[in-house]
Amino acid sequence: MKEFFDTSVFISAFRGDHPQHQPSVRLLAAANKKRSAGAVHSLAEVYSVMSVLPVRPVIPPEQVLLFLQEIRERCTLIALDEAEYFETIRKTAEQGFVSGRIYDALLLRCAAKAKAESIYTWNVKHFQALAPELARRIRTP
Image (cartoon, rainbow, N blue to C red; front, side, top):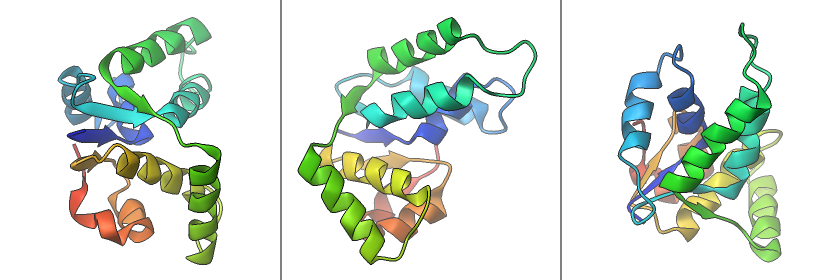
């Protein structure tokens, strides 16, 4: 895979009022399954965030499902098996990272599994701290 998208890129692409909307939507619009990937877990993260945003009108679940379908149409979705999942949690714990950083670590493991040349995120510092071996591939859209 040429590129991997973090959940932060998907969310900013779907939020027209997000400060990083334009670069994120351009990147997602150019994505295709042959070269673009994301994590299966990002579907749940996007649903969770987009369905509870404090906006008026509220984004209904049906609209959020359309966003998820867009991701599925444009990106190959990568999943971890049980051993990969546990190994990632173990490594993250050994590095001393806690709380929600585990989700970033799982996404990075998916990016590594996809052999992504570029990993796009709006959380560059967090991603580079978790996976210094991938630091040169981690960038903003």
